[in-house]
Amino acid sequence: MTYHPKSDFMQVMMTRGYLADCTDYQGLDEALNKGVVTAYIGYDATAKSLHVGHLLNIMMLRWLQKTGHQPITLMGGGTTKVGDPSFRADERPLLSAEQIDANIAGMKQVFSKYLSYDDTPNGALMLNNAEWLDGLNYLEFLRDIGRHFSVNRMLSFESVKSRLDREQSLSFLEFNYMILQAYDFLELNRRYGCVLQMGGSDQWGNIVNGIDLTRRVLDHEIYGLTSPLLTTSDGRKMGKSQGGAMWLNADMLSPYEFWQFWRNTTDADVGRFLKLYTELEVEECDRLGALAGSEINAAKIILANEVTTLCHGAGAAAAAEATAREVFEKGGVGDDLPTLALTPADLADGGISIVQVIVRAGLAKSGKEAKRLIAENGARLDDAPLTDAGLMLDAAALSAPIKLSAGKKRHALVQLAD
Image (tube, rainbow, N blue to C red; front, side, top):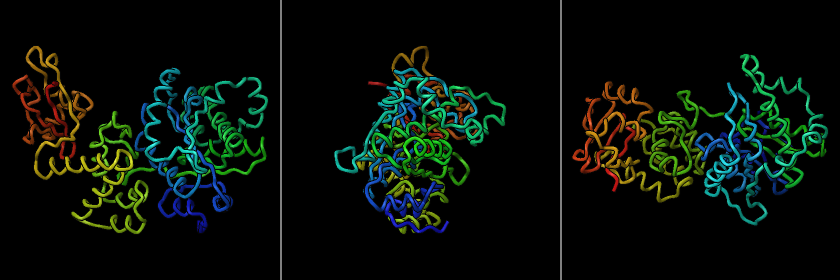
């Protein structure tokens, strides 16, 4: 694709690697050049925090606003009640209205760090699709909206087809999801003049449905743009680590652990991640990504600091870097390490087993995994090899905080609660 964009936003999307596909490159580029374009990304409220897998699209909204356009963050208070079946092997567990509201409250914390919600022409809007979905009349909706959808076409979308090809059940509830998401785009266009929906490339079918519906009902010209679904160079899904999801809320993942996730980026991914997750100039990202040997580690620290500053603030990034230097270079115990506080009740009946402590500190998912870590010489206690899986810790052993390590890069402090 040799299209050369005229608008700042499309230029950023293409030069930094955000763009996978677009329904009409030229039409969207021209609209962006004419004036303020309003665009949205939808987020279903399936957890109390967004994770690193969402960060690419949040950065797209940030760049949209930085280049003079208006972002909408659409909370899926309505669609979460149905659950997106796209490329899933099974149905999502249904959440109660209270759980959905609690999740939305948690997710909202992240967006204000990346976007400005103000009264300027391109001030971001925070909306919830429950506003129009909760009050729908089923028969009217079927008659006015349902008639525009071809079941044959819906069955041909890859997200649905892959599920049916594997002969996995797809409920009628889930099948309705793409109609509801399409309706979101129609309503956002009608109410807020929104002309662009963005999302990961797995959302292509849902986005195209919304464009078709809006054109049929309102005869308006609107657009869709998708980002690549990112995997790391070693094939892992972006945002997953051995410890689970990399959450963006500090109460679910400490800024230090978040910083460490970026510091541990594979050499081959550094340049690409700098372009996608920081605002450093493209040339600087390329220069840093091309460094080799021990020099690439300096680039990883820049990556970790830049991303952590955006998500948690400059102070958190500086504290995380200082802790990392203390722990790795001097072998000390840093102030910012994840901490497990044990109570006297935890130490009753002769103490608590080291295996249990490793699990509770988040360094292993299960006792079996913790025992394997010890057996394979991957665990350390105060920087000394931990070889006894039967070790019990009592109050005397915890008279001062102890440092537990899993491998070279994951650490936690264990101490008695005050």
